[in-house]
Image 1 (cartoon, rainbow, N blue to C red):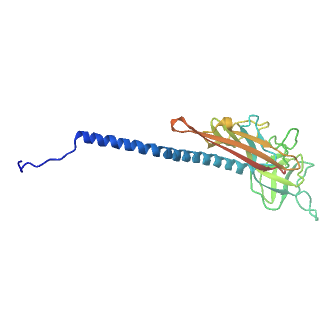
Image 2 (image 1 turned 90 degrees about the vertical axis):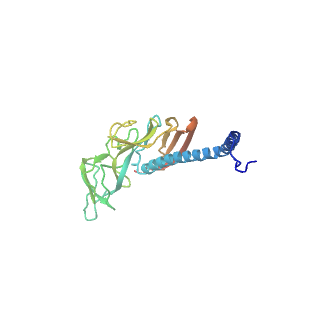
Image 3 (image 1 turned 30 degrees about the vertical axis):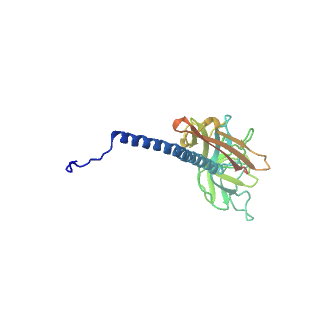
Length: 269
């Protein structure tokens, strides 16, 4: 053997093919084991996002409904829209003169333009409402306007254009309101409407004003609002909200989050 000739080593084509095949088998095996955990992680993240969207929307509705003018909550015939009148403040009006014969009372026998506030000074708003009793045959319906008047100024004395309010409040309460608000499930969205005119009867969805989307991918067929006013003696009502949000995942799978909420409404006028 010629010592000047060095032996040469290398990788044959057959060995290279074998390495590729073995590597592919190992990768396929690993993919089988990690596919489910990865899909589960993605699905959990998607469900968490949907849950957070639905929960945020329900919290917003709950917070707003607790500011509703007593006896102003109403739901349309389809159960897809709920409306209320939003309060910004309130207080108690003077119903009797002082022992010295002083004070500005709210007169219910003739048109009046002002009254003294007993207690903290209220915040300003658009209208003043006294003793709201929304319902069939009521003469104190803030939507209709017979117990509602434009507010000129609010302070220790509330001032407004001449108005004869139809009924006095047993507790001498008044409310200052900013206007009606509607929440509705329509077009695959949960929408908040505000800044529109008062309507009697209810118009759903309302016309005019502005709107803001609170949630998308809403299953309108599974969205509903209902309202139980309760008896006069209870002075509370209950709003029930069902909201479902769907999301189509890769592969056509549909993730669904369905949430249920009840809100207690104070109806003492």
